[in-house]
Image (tube, rainbow, N blue to C red; front, top):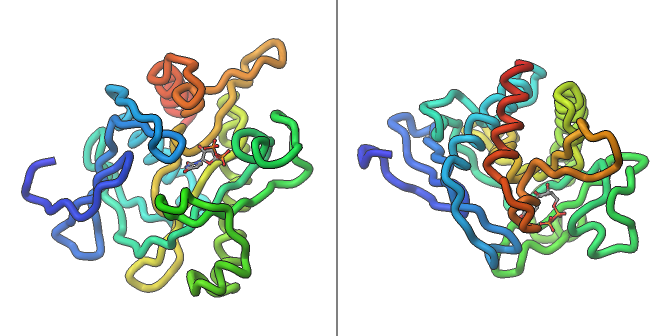
Length: 242
Ligand code: UDP
C-alpha cells in the first residue's frame, strides 16, 4: 500500500488503512500466519492474496442473501475496501462438527457430527488468551445488550446455513468458523473481518474413505504442509462455481 493512506491498525493477518471517505477503510491481507495465540508464526507467500480473494467472494454471496457485511469492493488482489466499523470484542465460533479446542476442552470425540450447530463465544483479548465467555459475563462487561447478542447469534446461524450449502456444492465440508461483528456509522450490527481458510475449517469431501483432508489453517497448525496448495484449491473451486 502506498503512503497516501494512514495505517490505523495492524493485526496478525491484516493491516487497516484510512480512506478518503471517513466511513470506509482499506484492508490489506498479509502473508503472515499465526496460531496458538501467535506462539507459532510463519509467512506463506501468496496467502494474503488468496484470503482476500476468497473473502471477497464469500462476502458477495452473503450480501446477495441479505446478510449485512462490511465488504464494499476489492481494490486489488490483496486489498479490499470495507465500511469502517466499531469492532465488538468477541469472536463468535460456530461448529457443525467437533474439532479443535472443543475436543481439547471436553470429552467430545473429534469428528463427531453435532445434532445442532454449537455457538461458542470468546472474548477478543490477547493478554487473556481469548477466553471462552458466557452471555451473563458479556452483559456484565457491557460489551453487548442481550438483544444485540441475540441478533448476532441469529445472523451467525443464518450465515452457517448459507455457507454450509455453498461449500457442499463445491465438495467442502464446513466444520466450524469464526466471525467478528461490529457497528457501522448508523449503529447497525454488520459482519466484519474475513471469511477464509484462516478462520474456517474446511474438509475435502472428495475422499473415498473417512480420512480427514483439511484444506485450511490446520495445515499450518498441525504441520500438514502444502498450505498454499490447499488455499488455492479452495479459491479454484469457488471460482469454478460462482
Ligand atoms: N478460529 C479463529 N481465530 C481464533 C480461534 C479460532 O479464526 O483465534 C477459528 C478456527 O480457524 C476454527 C474455529 O475458529 O475454524 C474454531 O477454532 P477452535 O476453537 O477449535 O480453536 P483452535 O484450537 O483450532 O485454534
